[in-house]
Length: 173
Image (tube, rainbow, N blue to C red; front, side, top):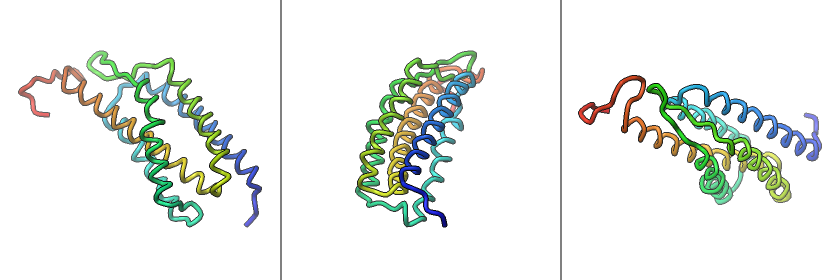
């Protein structure tokens, strides 16, 4: 197996993160044109959960303390700006995510913070372990954000008319 220089891996992971961030921005901006559904809220974290398969490889394994810390940093710190910038509105009986002008800025700031953190963390762990830590951080961020979105969706669903069907107090949910 060919040996790849750690500096090339670092550059590659940074470029990869930039490409992923641009794709997320593009997808999120397009998604605001389509109605939000419970399925669309739940699928991203479920799909992302397949990333836990990386821990089958011994190179990606990290201590439980580091894993929990990375997840909690994502849960409490990185999800907060996403939660604050996510607003729903009802139009023609459907729920839409309102475009936030700050969303793109938030994603770029998170990318910059991630890149700076990578520089620090890579001094203490291998590149695969660093990837595992940032996966856990991102997973914590996405799960909390999507739970928030699901709760907001449920509030809207319980309060009014969705998909052209009024929800009355007598109607079972």
